[in-house]
Length: 443
Image 1 (cartoon, rainbow, N blue to C red):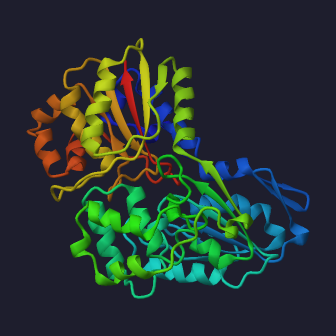
Image 2 (cartoon, rainbow, N blue to C red):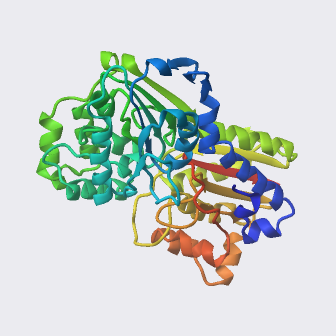
Image 3 (cartoon, rainbow, N blue to C red):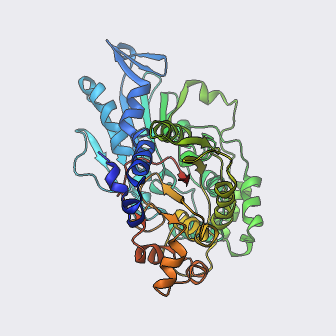
């Protein structure tokens, strides 16, 4: 289990309130531990499975199939497999990393992330097989968490893996929001945008969802495999036009977006037999951190869970919120969401580290202030860090080492900057994923 000391850095170890701060960070993650989240909404009452108040009499259920998809696939699946052990359910796990153990009767196929790869295609084929051929007495239970869009892929006919990889990389590089990326994914994949629910029909389908998307829109989480899709092919084309990518997009993708059948929409009768339940979210993690901060003697305030946009711009705004906060000290401001990064260089980092680096100059010399962006999955970008700690001393400590934050920011190179300061947060993979949280402390 994650411990507060997992978040220790140079600044937090040295600071008198550092231990309290690490407990606040830890509380946020523990509140959205996937197994706990599932058990909160699923109970076994005799020969009935009760999911968020809806009863499924098991004596009337034929086959039970379980699909665990995303970074928290295993942790979400284990409590459900335990509840249904007497029914010997078959299942498929599609995680990011290969777990040491998987439940009996479950196939295991890790996928690629953040860009789909050959393993993602194999995962997609296995998901098609798992959900295909079910009848009205059968039950498909999906456990969905962050990363699912890339980990499982079943492209529309004519669209190649290279096409998908190129498009995903281009969208990430130009700073497209995750909801915009998923709009395209839903229209280019047979399983996304309600495709899995359509494939499983007429079976009953239940999805327990750990949300990693701002606002928790069902269609955006893992690209909504069991949710109606409110977007159209025209919306997907509009994303390409917005980022001036149409001319560089493979013709096969453009053809699909112009001619393929639409995804199932809200109001479609298909979804009368589908139950989608949000079991964990960014707001839940923020609320737990807020409660822990209060118990530690801080004056806490939530700044909302819809922070989006360029990481360096959000850094400036949150820094100003910290500087101008009227709360009595010590205080803790908590902002949730998911920023983006427009790549300008070839450095190493992630959106949380970039946000932290952009705040270094903003907080320089501000007495008793800390800004801490945190990826709740423990992995920020292609690194082993979840974020970084910025203090009033970060700028001068870096300059003493010959490090200019502007130079590193220009190259999107936050990781080595904070590594030199020993202020990278490295809790390791947390097994959950509900977007990012930024903590602003006035001490």
